[in-house]
Amino acid sequence: MQKVASTDGTEIAYDVAGSGPGLVLIAGAFTGRSYFTPYVEALSTAFTVVNYDRRGRGDSGDTAPYTVEREWEDLAAVQAATGARFACAFSSGVMVLLQSGVPFERLAVVEPPFRTEGAPPVPDRYVERLQEFVAAGNPAGAAELFMVEAVGQPKEVVDQIRETPMWTGLVAMAPTLVYDALQLRDSAVPTALLESIATPTLALFSNASPAWLQESVRQTAAALPHGKAEGHEGTFHTLSPETLTQVLADYLV
Image (cartoon, rainbow, N blue to C red; front, side, top):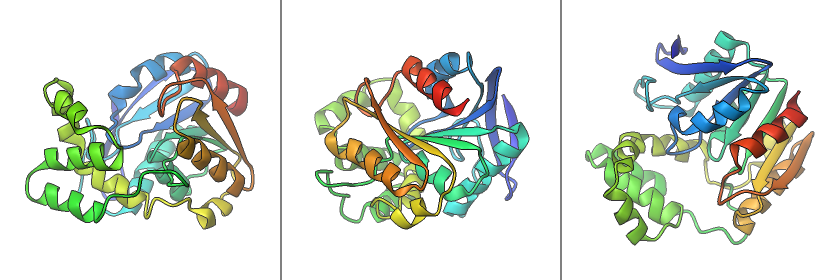
């Protein structure tokens, strides 16, 4: 593990593995760098993989007050420290990448959760309620709000997860759900932002994901000046490490 100081002094933890051109992985909500272990193992056969904890997660620090720009600066610091040429962002982490302006040569984005037709609605007062749970010292409430109302998991499934060792880690990351919600803005496809991005970008979806998520990827690629959408076999909101490695090796290198 290595650390780099971001613009505001917050230390951002990252690992580097493999050989080849540098590739930074940018996590979505409820995801620390430990989640990417199998992806790093696969991707490191083709890339020097930079796997970092977004602020407030894992071994990275956090500094109040939070603004979305701080995470853009974090990514810039990681890229400057490692010299990575490429970046691949997942889910809500896509907005960190696309808004950051960090000068990568090529980008890949995996299922940004922009709400297209057929998507579940954004929960009422979503950001405010997340903030209220965190301020009240109830991160578990924020976690349940995200999982049940934003993602759409049945409450009984979440209740089962509460009884597993996984729950402790999720609760520890729950305050950062506010960060992802703020990065996503109103969760609509950010057409104006996308149209301003000249970097060649590959937008990916799993064929097993809901139609609205697949459509989010297609609309994202269509709005990008140099965007391309591809669907591959996978599971819900996920491509396998082996599939992602093959696709990125073909596109980025």
